[in-house]
Image (cartoon, rainbow, N blue to C red; front, side):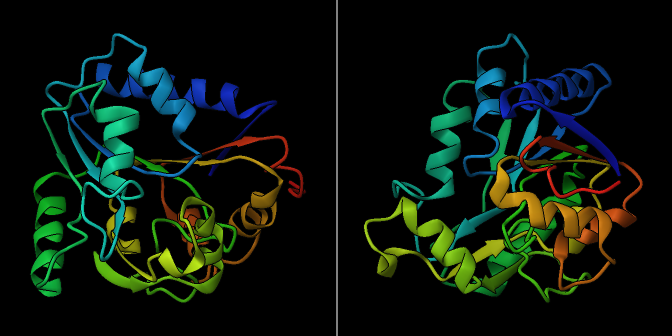
Length: 235
């Protein structure tokens, strides 16, 4: 793991933006994307730039199960608002939260990942060290799956919904095996609330109980942190 520490989240996000520049210049065509507050600055840099993604493909990590694509809190809506409506891609893929045939949707998304190997994957990290929606205990061998969200994840996401009862309890997510197939992975983590998860990911043992720790075994990972998220690191 290449650990990069910056004074602020904006400074870190600007450096990740430069990774996108370099990736495009090097011929990358497929990008794995994430949602949530962590990549918002990155997406702002991308949309205000002259980078051209018109020949590129984007595949998102996950989507809430049970939400239509046009729901205000769906990840499809998030991506359209923060990136796709302002910076068009050749094609974009997000799991279908309203899929009635779960196994068929899983097979569809796994086939897309086989057809479009990811050159550059963006990740955030949950307070319990989940990546995508791969919660503690998720198997390293799983590809796309329908997962039950941990109670801590549901609580963390409650701020986006009118009430806790409205928060989805399941989501489609790329599995750990899918994520680990990416050629290069950039994990972003900002704020003191992520510090323990970052420490466990970087300095703890590799274990499925800390899903992000599996990134220690990937040959091409960079971790972009602000000082608050890096505050518990010893190395």
